[in-house]
Length: 317
Image 1 (cartoon, rainbow, N blue to C red):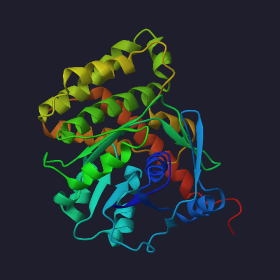
Image 2: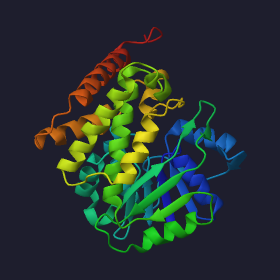
Image 3: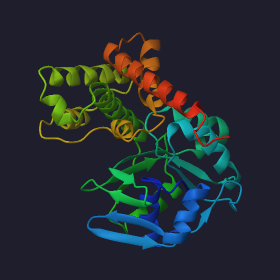
Image 4: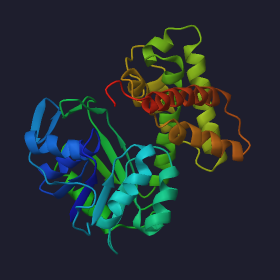
C-alpha cells in the first residue's frame, strides 16, 4: 500500500514515522522549508523515551507521482482548500483520503471534490508538537487513532492500515461507528478550546477559580445539546471521560488552540471547531451562549492576527 501524508508536522510526521518504522511505503507532501529541514536532518520524532530519526521521501506540491492508495490529511482546517488542491494529482480511481482534522466541515469539502466513497472518517487522541528545530515531540503517555468507512462498510485499505499500525506502539483500530466517534471528539475539543481560550488558562488554573467548574460544565452541556439535537448524543463513557479531563484540578493541560495563542500563532481553527458547531446548533434551534462568547473572542484574535500579517515589514522596501 502506497501512503502519502500531507504534512510532516506534529500529527502527520508522528504517524508517518510510525508507519515508516513498520516498513510501510510512506512519502510526505510538504512545503519547501520543511523539505529542506528533513533533507538535512531527517524526520525526527521523540516518543516514549526514544529518538527516532529517519530519511524519508518528500515532495513539494505538483511533484507527486500518483496514484497513492491512501492519503493521510493532517493540515490545519484553514489550509484545507490548498491541501485539497495539493493532493488531487496524487489520487486515482481507487485512492482513499483519510483526514485527521477535528470537527465535521472537512467532509463536505472532501466529499465534493473526491466523492464520499473515497473519504474515510478518522480521528486521533495524541499530544505532540513540532518545534522550530524540526523535532516532533510526543508528549502524551500514549496515543490512539481510529478510522473507518463512514457508512460502516468494510474497507480493505482501512484494515491494511490497521495491520501496519499493529507493528507499532500506536493504539489503532478500525471503527464501524467512526461518525459517532467524530462527534464525541468534536464535543470534547470544542468545549476544551472554548473553555481554555476564553478564560486563558490551563484546566487546573480554571478549576481553582470560584466559577471555573460551573463554566466548564455549562460549556460541555452546550456541546452535548447540539450533538444530541443533531442525532449524535455522546455516549455515557465519552461524557464522563470529557468531564474528568475538563474538571481535573491538578491538570496543567490546555487545548491545542490555547497553546497556539500562547505561541502567538497568527491564525486559529476557531471557525471550523467552534463556529461550525454553533452554526449547526443555531440551525437546529439550540442556543449556545458560552460557546458564542468564546467564538467572538477568538474571532477578535484572528482579526488582530490578520491585521498584523497585513502590515508591511520594516525591512520591506
